[in-house]
Length: 375
Ligand SMILES: [Zn+2]
Image (cartoon, rainbow, N blue to C red; front, side, top):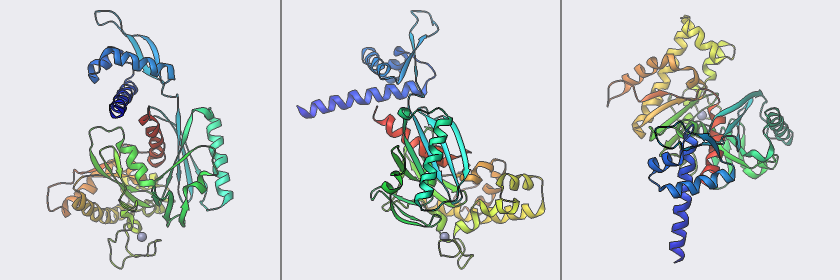
């Protein structure tokens, strides 16, 4: 009897969740449309939308245009009913984004703030976050929490940042960092956060590898609406796979890592620290830049071919380089095709959709999804 009761409760909750997600994905909709598309009876749908309106998640948006019969009541999601913050921490900068329940990026700010594992740094970070929220009129009660993207191994089981070579961190409990903020914090590896942003609203892709080419190199596997984490939460850490035995030294202590050859810094440092300027000069056909791009894509193609061999799925190029790569995808695909022994061409390599602050956005979206999942 208890089992039957809990099953009924689950069905009820599942229906409400599906109804909410349907409304969230529509500009405006109506009870009959929801009922028809989700194959849930009209009385059940009507009861659910009534509850969602009472909670403040959905609003009555007047009447839909008539399609012949009686005009149905229009419904739409109150997207700013709750908001989430994304915070991306890198060696020298922080990015803050604000996203609503539809996953829309509302505001974004990037600041120079060199990382240090000190009370002073975290207090400063909290002050910047509070300023950011105040400037954007995001009231405290609407904030669900802060998704924190970190360039390092984020172990959800042990609730700690196990390592970050870039930030020089080892075994730092989430609670220590959360303690400086007045909102709940949710931690995520930066490449995983980028992968999450890329995958969460794309129903057409089932599985892909996200290669994050930013000031550090990392990766994440997105599979069926979830991130694949691995036994010790190190899945996808391709930045430190060796692509050049006895190659140039990496900050991790090894030699010849992919990170050494394919971080965005490899390109931006040639153009006074600006990746956009690098690509601009490449497009202007300057020999030095053409040569550097040729070397870069040669190393990149080794990594892409290896990843494809292991996972046999699409690879999305993300991170800072992914944000600028659209016009140059052909160069990359051509180099990959030369290495590929199983298929012609390199169409499985794709540029990312989210060109801007994907890690911070992905961290915010993961907080939104936690909330939406329990509606
Ligand atoms: Zn390394």
